[in-house]
Every structure is written in C-alpha cells, then in structure tokens.
Image (cartoon, rainbow, N blue to C red; front, side, top):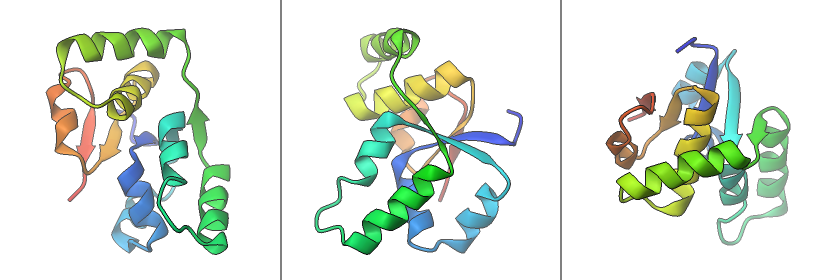
Length: 122
C-alpha cells in the first residue's frame, strides 16, 4: 500500500458527505478511486434532494471512477466462484484488486477475500 491512492466503498463516501471530519482528515491528500458501482450507489438513496445530488456530483468530480473492463470481469468471476458476496461488493472488490490498491470500507464481509488489501473503518 502506497498510502496515497485508495479505493473507497460506498459507505465511507456517504459518511464523508455527511461531514465525518475524522474520515475527511484520513482521506485528505489521497487520490480516491471508486468502482462505477459505487458511483451508481451514491445516487441510489431514496428522496435525494437537488442539494444532495449536487454534493454527490461535486465529490465524484474529484475522484477517479473505474468502469468495468474485461480484467475486472474476470476477477469478479473468480471472487464469485470462491466467496458468498453480493454482486455490487464483488465488483467493488474486483476493482480494488485490479488497481492493486487498498479498499476503504465499513463492510466486514470483504474480509473473506484473501488478497484484498482492506482498511476497515469503525
């Protein structure tokens, strides 16, 4: 882990948007990557206001969104064959593995993927 680049799961970004100062300090000066799944999940909350949408869009302008490519699809398939994990989480994990970057998450379920570099946030 180089400490500068990181993949974020959806929940840390939601907490960041909600004003979590400790998380903001941790992410300060880091290049953040997200799976396209995380990008879509950010807009999935019911009853988002126009202000919420603008905040999400502003956040996403400052991070790299990783689309699903053939390599990520293959890693995803390998994960799903070996682990009981939901499709969105498997794509997010596959994206982090593809980039060879740590994944920041609140979700303990990612621990079942042995080669995934995890930063679990409490």
